[in-house]
Length: 191
Image (cartoon, rainbow, N blue to C red; front, side):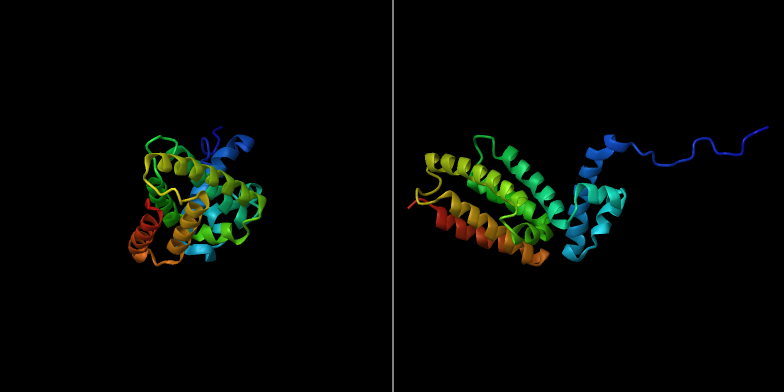
């Protein structure tokens, strides 16, 4: 007697805890796409759907939108740390990278900046501060920026740049970025 069951039904196997890291990465990547397309109005559930994971997995990793935004920015800060580690990197390079990141993370900027005292957000701020501090020291030593420029000036400038890009229409972002960069160059120049 032959069995009528199909040989090996095509179902997704539950890999349990082994899939956790992959699911987390997929959720972060999906969040970037979903919120870049639909802004913060996009449903949280759309992230799980785009990532190909269940709602339970989404909420296990990210209990709220802020947790998800922090994860996105944690990736961004890690990227900045790695990118600026090379001794030839400058404040200009940092601003270039912040522009690139802000364009794809615009929806999250509002969430992350809503409560800068949130410990999850504060930790990212401290790491970013360390990146800027290292670059300021390099640029001061090389004479690329004025001695009057402090870490807080650059962190404020990057925050202003990211916020402005987040609220600017996508087509107008390159011009807004160029205008802001001209202002920062003039303000940071040696005197």
